[in-house]
Image (cartoon, rainbow, N blue to C red; front, side, top):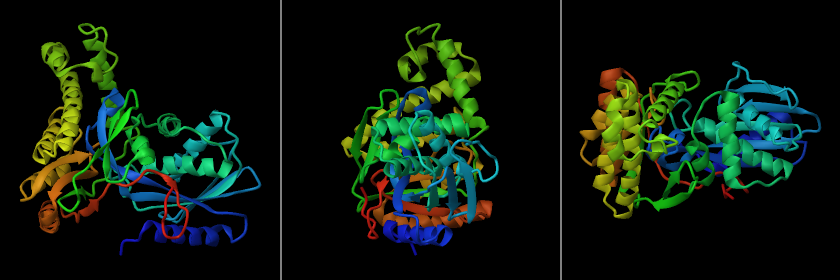
Length: 401
């Protein structure tokens, strides 16, 4: 049975009282969604364009102030506790889930925002390690909770920047800004066309779910970002910019390189760097074409661009894996699938698929059967919809602010 936000919030609140007792003052509940990126992969840290949605899988966190200087955390999912002082926050390899909370608190205090001790319980139904940004949801939910608990206000984009900084500098993952941005500022029934340099964004209406569904398939292969190939790809892109500046001195990032100029000067790059840059330059173009396709209701064109994106991620950026490629190949051969690609950083995690509504049930049956036959893994499949970004949960019915 799938529980609604309000029902899950009440379970979190009950667990909070079980762990910390019934006294201590008001319990503040907040939520922050995960995300799936429809197209625009690895472009965000290259100042490029992305097209994600906030999804109906989320992190819920309960906050209550303490009178001392301690932060006491409890993870519902891991049945695990962690405690630390506000004036002694350190990254720890044990209880790694706590580092996302600690990082946001650490960065906020760096900004000289006064925080009190607090008790926190967190619970999420975003699959961990699947590329649906459970980490960004924790960071954003923490930031929203800190605001409500401490009574300070901050512009949403500034909150997003601080959450990204927490992941970059405290957790040690050089992620771009997309995940935190859409977790806070996502819109119901819309994708977010985001310029990761200017942070200008435009909600783009999605097709009616009565006609077309966004279906995510989890390969069951976990991937870890920190200390992985992710940071290596970022360095390779920076190396590409350094090379291309010799021919295009005005550029600051790969986002500034038009396809026609890359076709002209790309051969001057080392082969591996050339392929990395080729993906980013062409992926930015695919995002802008995808936005135009949605606005024109040209969904087959949008699906075709998704297919092209996956091929480039596999061949040029080399962040796919056997299981992701298998999942995409299975999907593309199913009637009613308009497009399929890996989503997220890669090396495991999920695929995202555009599936005609009447074909979703058959799609799930075929994917589960064929993927199990090849891998002996039972894939999880989620039928998603675009939801609002993070906010306070105001009552037990799940009303959001």
